[in-house]
Amino acid sequence: MSKTVLSFGLTPGDIAMGCGGSVTLLTDQGWNGVNIFCAYSGENLNTLAKEARLAARLLGVSEVGFLLVDPGAEMFGREAVLRAAHLIRKHKPDLIFTFSSQDPSPDRTGLSCCVRAAVQAASAATPEIEGTPHQVQTVFGYEIAPPLCRFGHAVNITETVGRKMDAINCYETLIGRKVEEAMQGLARYRGRMSDAGEFAEVFEILHGEHDPFHDWRDD
Image 1 (cartoon, rainbow, N blue to C red):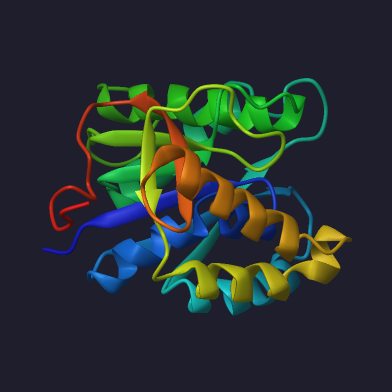
Image 2 (cartoon, rainbow, N blue to C red; image 1 turned 180 degrees about the horizontal axis):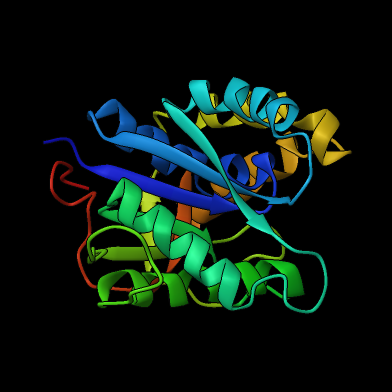
């Protein structure tokens, strides 16, 4: 049975920027890729999904979905946690990517907290959540800007950095600014300082100890 990587972001560009190279490495190895983005109830999901699928295909991701949230102080409250936990039980991921807990943005930190709470809820006998309990092996927190002060894992993305940049380019109009050069520079910097390779992505380990990349890579 194929393994699954489930990635969460606020917008379609977040996943490409934060973990696009690592996701592509996994999908190249036959993993199923699922990207989940936040959307307000009532938004035109058909339009959002069309934009999101374009870059997702470049990363080898076969499915795009949405975590519906309500605007306001409770955006990532209990209802959002239950919805995220349902998505975890539905897709049964081995690995989850989300924002790092160190991200200074309140919305990004909110989503990261929501996902981590959902991982716990999805593994427990929570009657409000449809589906059978599922235990996620590993949760990695990715960086966008500013860079992480501390990280626990680095992945050599030299062979997939080109597709990561192509995916980021798909989202330039959504992101509202050109970020390709900045993200490529960050990947090069992370490769050098971590000694992982020419280009790398680094992550905070939010849950679990298993390294899914060690299963098939020597570096």
